[in-house]
Image: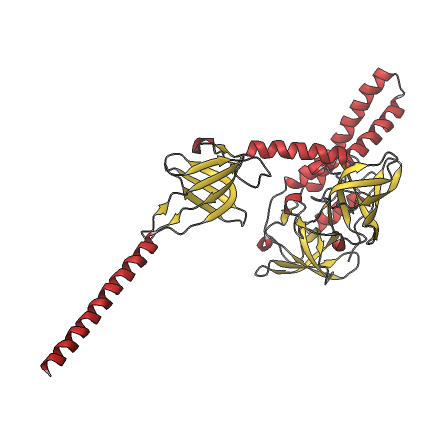
Length: 428
């Protein structure tokens, strides 16, 4: 009996010892795991560099501001814009990273002690390389791009017919999108940036869409072979704010023309501006100065050619108006009219930026955006320009006056407002 009790006691002791060892081992493993920093991967633009603390701050593509540490073990690589691997990456140092560069950050994070660990690798696309790429793309779109409004679609042949503005009026151009390498994109609901456009397909195209295409035009100008197509649906509304929902980021607008109400969503990409009280006067002055510059240029050119003054002025004004409407961001056309569209865009860009909380009931607004495919009364704003209702009304009247800026639209280039056809987008 004593022997049995001894064996039992030894078994219990062994079990307790094994449990203690297991608990200690598990705890050690858990502590070791906790001590390892959480691995992160960040993509964004460099906004600040602290050489003293070896810390880099970026604004991520998600809109967050994040700082990370670099150290002796951090690897730095630079790749060209558009590269998908590190095969051709160049070895660089932290000193080569500049504010404005795009970076992909791997590793690092925060350890159990709360201290930030140095990141493992930083992959850089330099701001200068991005600027050079954008310049090349802009030139390419300017020389090999077309834009217009879709008037017909043939799903069987994948042909797209567009109406495009030219010096002779409206041209009908057939775009053959049947090629296997044709890239089709659709503008994001709240952005006109090509970089924000999403991969799409022929099936998503609709009659009435505004379209831009990059490729080669046939010798007779009636057909076009595309490499890339970007399309989207856009609308413009002028009205009065009847409700502001800051929690949802929405405003309700009563359209001045139809009397209908629209719910307008404001996203992180939406550009909001407020018209200052003297904006119409500033715009009028700008237009007059532009006309004076055109007249002076026409007089100088005409004097050299020995042409009558009136003929010179009319010809130069016409040429510059066409140039103003066919020149724009990313090489695309920009609605202009007298005075040049880009200059008016600069005026709008100089207006004070606001947010939804700054909008109020009774404000006059001009909205450019994308209507919902399921409910046209809901619009995602690309640009929202607000101001005192009387000022907005004066601006609209200015646009309608003879010689006024009829095609002017706050912030939207001519290749999407009017689709290059000289008209305005269809209203929902």
